Structures are given as structure tokens and as C-alpha cells.
Image 1: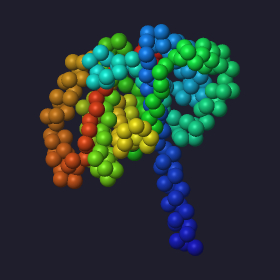
Image 2: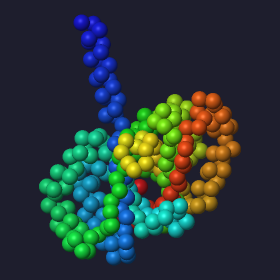
Image 3: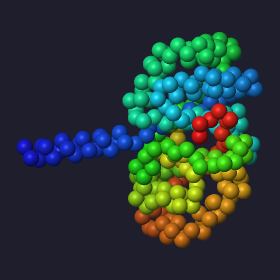
Image 4: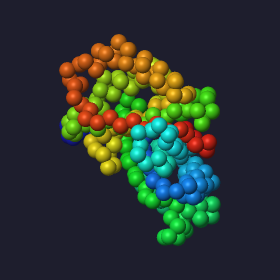
Length: 255
């Protein structure tokens, strides 16, 4: 009886811990032309973000690639949605279907014809927030949004085991704490649970401008804690591919 009770308590604690972390969706719209870009901006600004706010999601990020981004497809829009739980994410389509204001404001997008679609395709990435950074954070920046540089990084691991090792490096190794101490203004850190590139983790750091970004990474590389952490035998060879995409926030983005 005692063992069964302890097991039940442990399961409840695990579920509570999982629920304490945000659940993220990163939607990447791939566009073919300027008209699609204009139509998507109008939909996101006037219909989608207001509807998500009404649905209890106070902050949603909308970002576009900077010209010098490594992305080959420059016609993209990144929409970052932090949910309080997976249940909130899974219920959203139903919530939007019942939102009459959303249906009216987004009608041109929602009812677009097959030969004039508002995008070429939508790519979706789902993530669990890191244990060491369980919630999305608004960046503490003062520069105009047009000057800001947001850096989206993904770290792919050669195997699931190496990937978990890199996640552990951020959490138990406190790489998250190092980024915070050096003022990287991270919006999120997430474990990719569904996406085209796996195993993978992603995070988004923010800077006042490109000069600030370069200075922060220079300080990171020279930091004594980073030198010690990255040299530890247990954290070797845990990244097989590191992709960097430079973004800027739209004027209507909450982040």
C-alpha cells in the first residue's frame, strides 16, 4: 500500500512538472510573392494575433528574415506561439472556429480561393520548453524593432542520445544561465518534439542591433565558464549541425 501511494505521488509530481513548462508552436509561412506577404501581414495583424490574445495567449511573435540570413528562402514569416500547455494548443482550432470576430476579420485569408492562396506552404515545429527555462520571456530591448536582430538557432544531434546530452548541457550544465548572465535576452529554449529536422533543439536570442549581437557572441566565446563547460568530456560531439537564422520582429509582433 505504501509503495503504491509513493508511486502515485511520483507520477502526479511528474505530470505537474511537465505542465509547468510552456508548449511552443513555431509556424513558418513560405511565400511566393509580395501579394502573399501583404495578405499574410494583414491576416496576422488584424485577425490572428487579436484572436490568440482573446484565447488567452497574451504574447505572440511574428518575425521575418534579415537579408543576410542563411535561409535560402527569403520569403518567409515566422510565427512563434507560446501555449501554457499542450491542451491549450490542441484546443485552439476549435476556439478560432467559434470566434466570430476572427472569422470576420480574417475572411479574406480563411476563404482564399485555390488559385490565389495566401502562402505556398506552412511548416510547423512543435517544442517543449526547457526545464531550465520553462516559460517564454519578453526581451528587454529599447531599439526600434526594425533595427533589432533576433537569432534563431537549431542544434541537431547525431543521435537521440547526443541530442539529450546537449539539452542536459543547457539545463544541468547551466548553459541557459550563462546566456542569461551575458544578457542574450533569450525569448525561448525548446526541445523539438515534431519537425522536419530531428533530433533537434532550438532557441531564440535577441539583440538591439547587429553590433550588439556580435559583441555578445564574442564575450560568450571568451567566457571562462563556457571554456570550462565546453571542454568537459561528457559534453563532446553532441552537435552535428548548427543552423543560424537572423530575424527581425514586425511592428505588430508582441516579442
